[in-house]
Image (cartoon, rainbow, N blue to C red; front, side):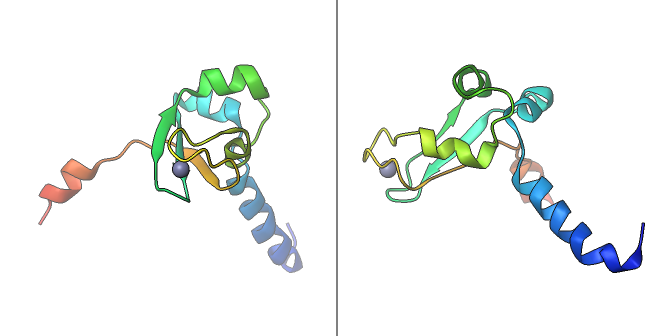
Length: 95
Ligand SMILES: [Zn+2]
């Protein structure tokens, strides 16, 4: 590993992070959290159902392009990310 490749390494890491694929979520047993940026409607959809339509190598952040908001019919501006488990309850109790 060469020092002057640091810039490139940083970019590679960024690309990797932004391109979580559907089969990665299957492996982690995570569903997909989607959020409509227009009306703030949000929902969780089963990764398995999405993967049957789009294939295992489809990037999770791109899934939103194939979704339609059930509330305002928006198709242009839907964000999708892995539905990471939250530990809010435990953190809230920690003073
Ligand atoms: Zn909406």
